[in-house]
Length: 87
Image (cartoon, rainbow, N blue to C red):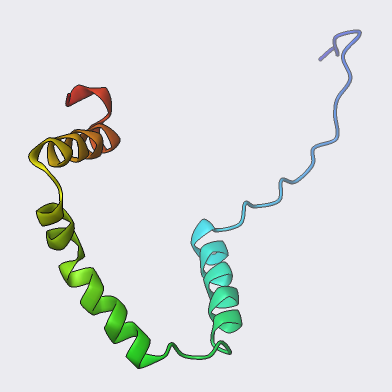
């Protein structure tokens, strides 16, 4: 069989297999866990106080707002969540 003129045969290179994304994610997660295990724990009293404020915050804020302010806040939240669809 005759070879075509002007064409060259390239040396075939073996492709390196792609890294498994699950293994890559696991190694990143292990690295993060290793770094954060040495951090000090949160102060339980501060956590409790923050949770108490968080539980009553939305209701207290709504009671302090006027109807017009609550409507504006709700429209802003809907726009942030769904874009311009909800107006």
